[in-house]
Image (tube, rainbow, N blue to C red; front, side, top):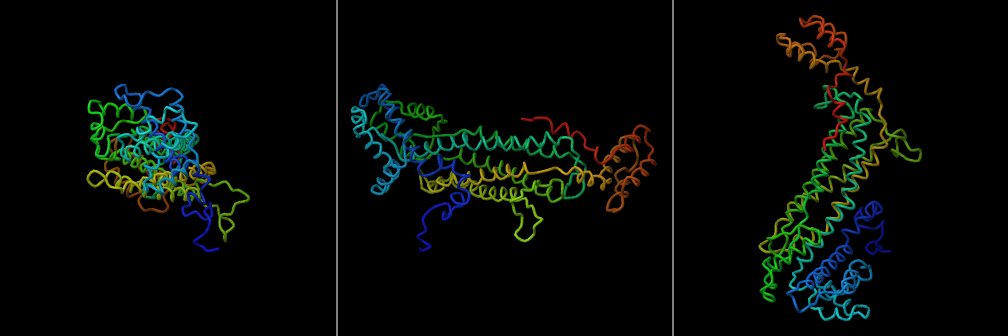
Length: 466
């Protein structure tokens, strides 16, 4: 078999989203495949026809009966692969994808199973529309639905897992490592709570982002609409139509909706992805330090050469997919809002890759969610690290010294602790005993250990900051 004639399947697919990971990304096909786009175009076209027929001042097409309306809406609801193939056959002749959709609908209206009276309004299919009127609404619907059905639920599920770690390990002391060096302790739960709070902010921004649509003709001015029906309020008709679809109306545009909302949505998703990259890297580091072990599965292999290995591959896979997603999203945000004069086609091929960016984001979230339940906290290792770093209490001691007016407290603790390799409890306590501070303050410092020097980390980990 010639290598350039391999049949298309999950082993030969060019993109790993449709190959190696096809089972995980399959739900996206209903939103961002060519089939999904064609179905959404059919939906917009038939809803526009129904909307036109409902206009009392548009006499040439009468308001549709329930039977007629149902038939038209079923063209979208029951749109099938054979229907999509028919549209593509029409496109092969017209060399225009949206015109092919228009012709497909007209064909269906003339079929024997269609209500006979529908054919009279056939030429009001795609009435006064430019292709971008249909496309921008189709994409807007797909983006809105994918966000609602796939993206937001996956984000909430991930957030729930991270919050679970914040709650479960709220009081588990852990040595902090600012600049990679031993620092004032925190708790494991507090560090996960930080991520939960950030992810929640990203989720909120994504779900609250308005999805816009325009419907104003070839140059954004209702030129053809007014030429045919100069007395109708076309801006009001268009606004009502777009709003009825569940989108926010874009009142000013060129031929294309300017895509600013899409750029904003991409930036919100980049932010969410970047927070998850940060989480992946921190967890990877905690595994490396031994703070977490990973549950072993008997049938898994960590390394082809080193039998002992359990690699943090879920977090590495997640990080890699997030990088790919963000690269695409950044390109979308920089490219989509720019269009030469009243329209160019650079956005057309870019928009077809929305599902690719979201596919990598969803894969990344799934990978992180697969890795988190495998983590097992090693409390003994955490305690060992804390017990070996008594110098982190220098901050507490010098701050108490400041309170009671002891001269040069920072400098004295710096001289005592900085760069020393054998500083421990005995050395710290010997220093504290020399301090001219109240007895109760001295006793508090002497009772303090790195493990209980955690401030209000445990409380913060248990709090919700939605």
